[in-house]
Length: 185
Image 1: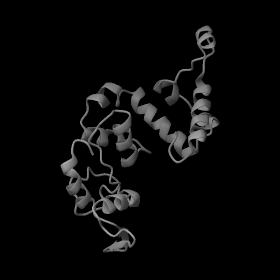
Image 2: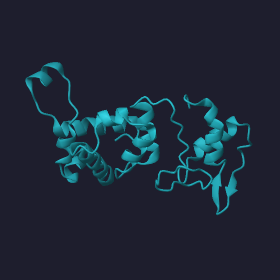
Image 3: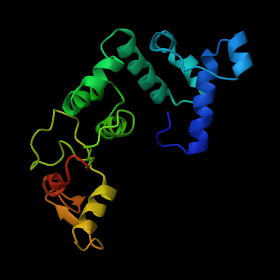
Image 4: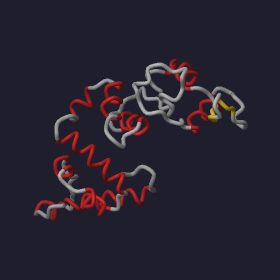
């Protein structure tokens, strides 16, 4: 919900989203605590209902699709905690609306995986093997630039890759260099 919006907007949307499902109970009134709706609660809703929280149509569709995967048992919290990084990437990027970067950030911050290094270029760089069949991406120029600067390259000038794509360095070069920092990338 919070991607591509300000922190204040994300908090407001999250609160409105929870409010859509809020059941008033004596316990919630006395503690002031709210709950987050379960996947079956979310997946049973129409996208138009989810949009009442301030979600875009696409984001509401993506949240509903993710909830459906959990509601039907295709995904479980236990499976995600026990899965390898590659399995997490494969399972979650198969969900409409979840891309490589989002899944890597989830693995890093929610699952506390330490060896996550998001180049943002998977499948875009022909020099990099093991692309997991993911959708091509343009790459994160900020990550490329930061890595190039760290390696002492002149980052004031972009360099072009054959075909006119602007790159500071290839994914293969970034992964090769970062390998020595594993598992703390």
